[in-house]
Amino acid sequence: MSRYSILFFIIFFSFGELGSDEIKKIKKYLNNISSLKSDFTQISGDGSITYGTIFMKKPDKFRIVFHKPRTEILVSDGKKIALINKKINTISMYSIDQIPFNFLLSEPISFKNYIISETTNKNNILSFKVSEKTQKGKKIKLIFEKKPLNLKKWEIEDSQGNLIQISLNNLSTNITLENRKFLIVDPRKNPFSKRE
Image 1 (tube, rainbow, N blue to C red):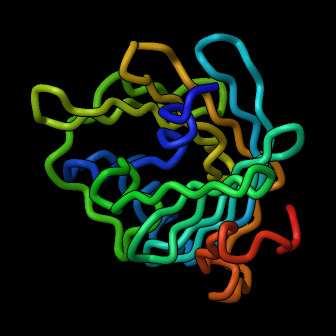
Image 2: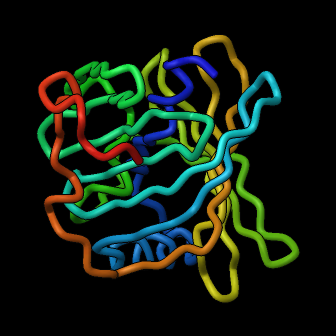
């Protein structure tokens, strides 16, 4: 799986304000989440499958740990983002502006400057596509269980148009997460740190 696919895991979705009851309920549901932890399964466009665990804490903090045989960790401390590989002691830094991710970590979530399309309400599933209004805007499909309302999955496209699907499992919300979990530690400066 490419680095682009890893970075695309973190998603930016601020929507355009809508009158739909379902969208309003989803907005309220998401704004009531201050933190979360979930296992995930990621299926890339080439059919490869990756497993891992994601932690998020508003505002702007997240930690994604890919399970073996993958060795990457993707971390945001709220100001910058790091892609870390402890096995080979490498780190790549990114600004938050480089990563399309502001939705789940925003506080509060704002539904502005986006187009919602391809809405579906069927078989206890709510889904819709979110698109930036810019010419090269990103497109993200969100999928929720309706009753009880839960975020279950999102789908995105990479720069080549390949579909990347991320399914959430064992989702827990509003849990205590210490800020130290989101610290960025350079493995080159601490090469004997505990591997995850």
